Image 1: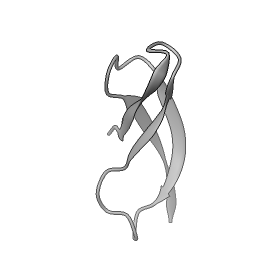
Image 2 (image 1 turned 60 degrees about the vertical axis):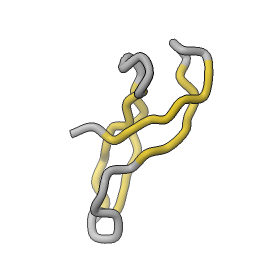
Image 3 (image 1 turned 90 degrees about the vertical axis):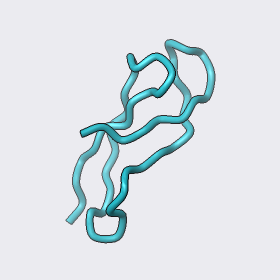
Image 4 (image 1 turned 180 degrees about the vertical axis):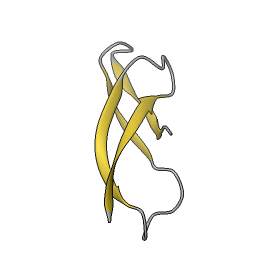
Length: 49
């Protein structure tokens, strides 16, 4: 039941990470603080469609 999702930078919207999540346990969208190489800092990344 794990699906591959994309996490997009909220600051520049250029960089994306791909990861997996369990759709049954986590129904809302993920938000993680990760490093963006375009912004050169740690910013929140949100799940895209």
